[in-house]
Amino acid sequence: MHVHDLNPKKTLVVVIIFVLIIIAGFLTLKQPRFKYKLSLQQSLNMLHNEEACFHPWQLADVLSKVNGNVVLVDLRDNFTYSKGHIPGAENISAYDLTEDKYFNHLKDLYNKGVTVVLYGKDRLQANGPWMWFRQLGFDNIKILLGGYNFYKAHKADLSKSKEDKSYILGIPDYNYSEMAQPRNASMGEAKKNKKKTPVIRRKKKTTTASGGC
Amino acid sequence: MLLLVTGALFLPQKPEYKQTKPEDLLYEIIQPTRYVTTDQVAKMIIDKDPSLELVDVRDVSSFEKFSLTNAVNIPLDSILSKSNQDYFGISGMKVVFYSNDDIKADEAWVLTRRMGYEDTYVMTGGLNCWIETIINPEIPSDEAPYTAFERYEFRRGAQMYFIGVNVESKTTKAKVTVHRKKKEAAPSGGC
Image (cartoon, rainbow over all chains, first blue to last red; front, side, top):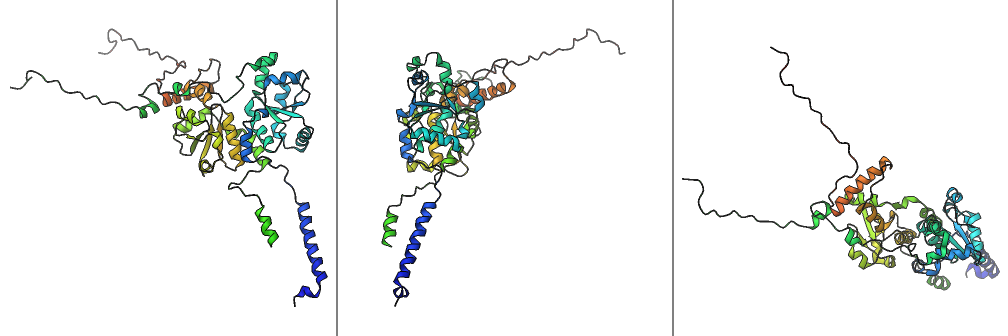
């Protein structure tokens, strides 16, 4: 006879305690502060999402308060921000993004359905933080194409930038193959690619024997 | 027992790479050390640095028209494919991503860094900047600091290496004037 058959109630109590311990363990398990919501493939697909970008000409509506559902966040450091920024923009340096105070603020904006537009001095400065937030599931966060530098150069008439596509990056500015073509085969890398064609010089036959007896 | 086996079936599949924690990823994203300049890349190519692995993330046709020396082509859209991951995470190798500018390269960096691959970098400015700095370097102004002239001299040398342009240094060199002693007509003194 098995030991538990003698006292089935005791067995039941042990099982219940065991289950309760497991449940308590799950409940008190420390959740990570940040968690990826998008898989890597979803993150890659997101890069093609036009909706995740904010064009400079769209700023015109934000600045004239026509679109009040947008919060601009300047990721540059406080000193650079104080020298000049887009009117109404909040300053959260990229180094402070994980601080509770700022992260919770951005979380609140997400919960309220407010669009957040991140910008740095150029697009590159905001690109990494923007990708990071998107991977964490903040689909309300967009990136300002062209960054502050483009805004500063075109702030007099932002609506005109609709025709100006110079802020859209990823386009080759030059014909690389033509410009970087080796120009003088006698030097450098070019030397390896072009082989000299050997010129065979033959001695000219002379009609009369020169010299000798 | 049956419950455990059923539970195990529903567990998410573990990826082959060790994903970087989100907080660590952001910390690395904001570090300027993940960028390398076109000058640094040019120097590594010229020095034939064996640890350099250039990864061109543009599409295949753009890569076939032009690419940097010994670069491999991994278009951004296929960066997650298993076969391409063999290029990353090789001990002692520095992976440098480049594209037309630096945005696509930066995106490739973020994705591969999330996958846990270290020693990856982004070439700032991409090929557009390569043309402007290495292939067609601009002469510094007269007021420019000494370092700008040094950098320009390096770029002229790199230009000669990559496209074989005859270099005539455009920096002003002090002319050396040789003053010879005038020969005297008749020897003076002596016997």
